[in-house]
Amino acid sequence: MKKFWQLWLTAVLATFLLTACGTSDDAKKDETTPATEKTDKAETEQAVEEAFPVTLTDAVGNDITLEKAPETIVSMIPSNTEILFALGLNEEIIGVNDWDDYPEEALKKEKIGGMEFNVEKIISMNPEIVFAHESMLGTSDEGLQQLRDAGLNVFVVKNAADFEQTYKTIETIGQATGKTEEAEAIVDEMKAKVEEVITKTQAVENKKRVFVETSDAPEIYAPGKNTFMQEMLDMIGAENIVTGEGWVMISPEEIVNQDPDVIIVMYSYVPDIVESVKKRDGFSNVTAVKEDAVVQVDENLTSRTGPRLAQGLEEVARAIYPEAFGE
Image (cartoon, rainbow, N blue to C red):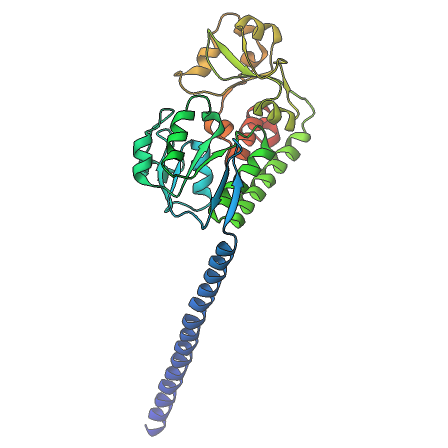
């Protein structure tokens, strides 16, 4: 019996010691991990502080000087908003455009209006920076000047015409907000996706002739040369049947004559638009209709010059060359 109690006591002591050691190790982890996190956070904050003050020139040639990373931001267009959220600026964003719907957090932000924005409301919000957009010029010049006259920093973001300019836009907004590392990471990820899509489509032997439309009949508009969509088609080795410059209006008869292999619809304001396109007069003889290759793509992915643009390229590529993606 005595031996039994000795063995039991030894076991209890051993268990106690192991538990104590584990507790000690856990305590050490608890002590070191927060310290490491604090160090990393301090280094990040120091890097951000050292990046300011910064002076940036916007799309209209105005120099905007920021003494520190802005803590309150208003975004006036969806592409800017997507970039700002991707940079991790959810808490700093205090106002967005009425049409901003991505990410989901954007729906919860205070709205400042659409094309006709509420100048008084933006001024009352007193943001440290307002990100406007070059596409607003001509219709919103007076309102933007009112914001400047009220003492607000208004940075007009360039209207990116290709992927390279989109990358530059993201990097510039990152620089203005103290998020340069985050901006670089976003651009790197986009470039990797673009390269992946190009590699997959390069292997396709049967190159397709494509028609892309951005509005319904009777006024059908389509992108031609020197447009973002033309760059996308060039990247994946597809031929655009539209050879005109910029955005052109094209008749249904001309589309039938060109007989595209694929028709891409880049809008969603018409219900059942894919079926509607197929039922247009004469379209039953078009290859794209006969081979069920009329495809609707997400207009936001393919037109907003922000972090999701590379996904837009992939969606267009899948619509034209589904076989390249195992579909």
